[in-house]
Image (cartoon, rainbow, N blue to C red):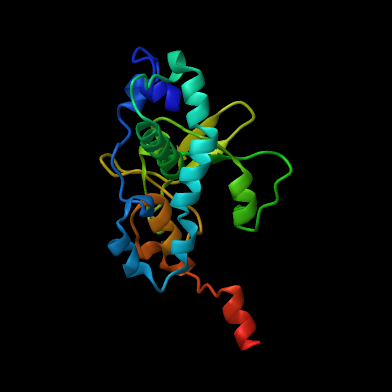
Length: 203
């Protein structure tokens, strides 16, 4: 994705990539003062910007520098590469779909655990990723087949109505972290998180 978006402008993916945003409201881009408003939430510990900065500098930047004919960035410093890598990471987190694979266990609602979801492969699905989401009014869903992905409506949809996907049982804190907004329709999935030290103190 980094090569396609910053390398050859004649890429067949350019029309799709040009539609994707280059500015975000996700927590990765909040200022320290804005993040302080979340002081009572455990979601702050999940942002990990410094950790990702280090990982990108160690794993992404060397690859980009090794093959400039593929990735571009000639004459640009590592900070530009880092910014672009963060944009790609944010796009994948906000727009990509989890691709189901064999051997993964799901719960009664068809969702996987957070640990298994983290290990799943991600796929950018043009058009399907343009749908907004609503936990109550969801009328479309991405279905998987052995050969392709298919976004289908779940009920009759009147002409001119919005197609709405569903992110699954995400608490609003993770909705904010991944997508940059919250919605009351996901309040039912909110959780109270207790740290290990707090539990040990109360034990």
